Image 1 (cartoon, one colour):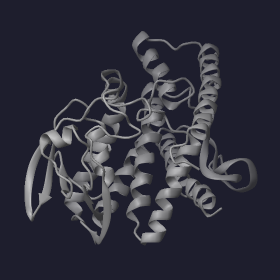
Image 2 (tube, rainbow, N blue to C red):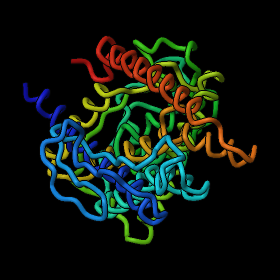
Image 3 (tube, rainbow, N blue to C red):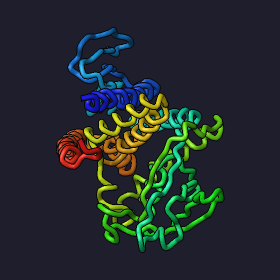
Length: 358
């Protein structure tokens, strides 16, 4: 029961500010572009109460406490003066992309604060090395402590897993601590299909994490640079995931999409860890990742998403005339139906094959 409460509570705690910031990005961009906004709502409909009205915009409070929404005038009808569809190409591109831009800025801010706090440091040791594994061949021994992987400081076992899982068939440099001395060892992780994931891993090592009670915090300047680096890294990994899957560098389970249930579980785990350890880093880190993911996903050229609408604006800019609003509206409607179907399938997958077993 406690786990369920953590899952539900953390879902709203994480997604509400991310969605709200996304909609605020659209709102302020529309205002700057002189696009009329009919309604700005806190939460999702149905409406609970109309708060007030200013400059032709209704501000409302809605029953579903998840982020908010912006309803621009003339979203799909260019005949409405002052509406979104009647605005210039530049104004529409700015307004449509501003939601994702706001999510990226939020992620940079969150990561900046997180790095200044610093991740909790765990000592990650290797209790077992499988016989005839890449790790044994390279010279890793039981009892070794992993200090760095590919130049990235190891603060927990997740750091090791992330670097190894994306490097199948590619040499990975481990810096390990043995008998008080640091040693550099290069290991080439096996590709999926070259080992049994139920009994072994890509490198053939097991990991044990032990809290040190310390955080490796960074200064404001370094933290800002690292926040840009991690934001770029998340986007790059997402873009390259299909290629890595085809090349066999990651398995299908590692490249699987995550839906509402999966996000809720992961958010609950991060929130519970933050509460038990009294450390804001876990929940900040997870929130930053989801903010980047939401911004990136919304820019994909999928009908019904911001990226789909941007695609139509770009086509209009190239061909010199607008696609008929009725046809564009039909494409977005079909896209929305397909998107809802995909969400249902992903949700079923999250339940049948959960990321974190129930």
